Amino acid sequence: MKLKKKVAIVFGTRPEAVKLAPVIIELKKHEDKIDTLVVVTAQHREMLDQVLNLFEIVPDRDLDIMEKNQTLTRITVKALEGLEKIFIEEKVDLVITQGDTTTSFVAALAAFYQKIAVGHVEAGLRTDNKYDPYPEEMNRRLITVLGDLNFAPTSLAVENLRKSGVSDDTIFLTGNTVIDALLHIANREDSVIPPEIRSKIIPGKRILLVEAHRRENLGKPMENICRALLSLVNDFPDTQLIFSVHRNPKVRDTVFPMLRDKERITLLEPVDYPVLLSLMKKSYLVLTDSGGIQEEGPSLGKPVLVMRKTTERPEGVDAGTAKLVGVETENIYKSASELLTDSAAYEKMAHTANPYGDGQASRRTAEAILYNFGFRDERPDEFGTKLFHSTVGGVS
Ligand code: UD1
Image (cartoon, rainbow, N blue to C red; front, side, top):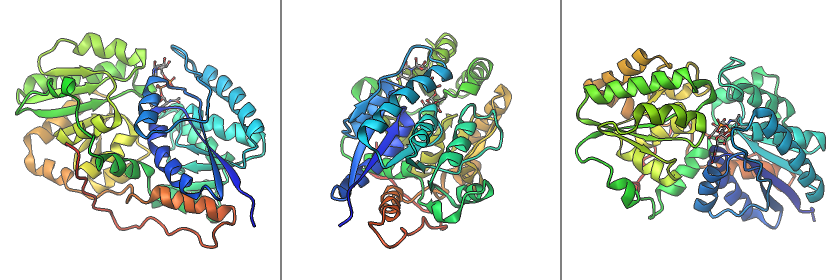
């Protein structure tokens, strides 16, 4: 009989938690073979805890590292020291990390220092621009170099990994686990907007939903974004802007002074994940610099305008569900106003298939882990190249 293996799932911020929660749920189905150790750095506190509560995940270890105005170095140092201790104490066999945050990279580095294998969920995303997004593009490249198992969400990500010299045996085409999370939550009965937010929604208006927080967009680009949003709401009286404002003080210092107390503009504290999905479903158009929202849009039939100069998720742009609009006021305004006035252009973007996943990514990831340890003889099936037409019910 094979001995049980211990797998540490490490994360620190909200998007990592959303995308790893379905993997944790899936791995826990194999308790006879795998001990799943949930480790959070808590690079983010409140926003991480929202997701832990939602998926009813209680971390086994919590480093609680978040500080106000933390620097990348500070996050790196605190997480590296904390994770090293945990990995040694817990005698971990495999570390699973997701995406491209500083926590994700440091988890891989700490594992490497202990000669522990590394599995990377959402491997192979690239912009090929070292500083955009910063530091995420470098984090994801470094994790690829340190990694042993690569769970690629799309065939493009597989290609990127091959180009980086990664061997095919270590690559598993799984689809993106964000779609698993979305389907999990969207089908739950409690996915409703709470009364205090519902009461702020103005009946009959087209909702423009906004979320923006990326480091490279702080300061001037965020001001440009706010200026475009102000003009849109002014020029389209049948719209309401709803902005879920990130906890980062550098986001708030721009957004609140520019958009507070304006007609038909509603600023919300970061909303829970199911509420965000419900708001997306109610909205006409989504404007964001978030990666996850770019992936969720197609499942909810919503066009997404990506307020960034680059994206590591060109699949949505190619499929026609997302458009890269940059961070200049004029371009953001022009693209949004086109979708507000041209119904044919709108319909084309709203009715495209989802290139990111089919809701089976976490099952494939767990099976790949079992295969890696020799608990299974077969590799998991691959996420199909066919586009997945998902219709999400139950979100309102
Ligand atoms: C981080 C990730 C980014 C990810 C984003 C998701 C890095 C380098 N960046 O960016 O890839 O898209 O998280 O949100 O890892 N804060 C709070 N409470 C919270 C969360 C944040 O107060 O619940 C404040 C902290 O004081 C912190 C600041 O926000 O100083 C910025 O957080 P940080 O983790 O440094 O970077 P983000 O820009 O949030």
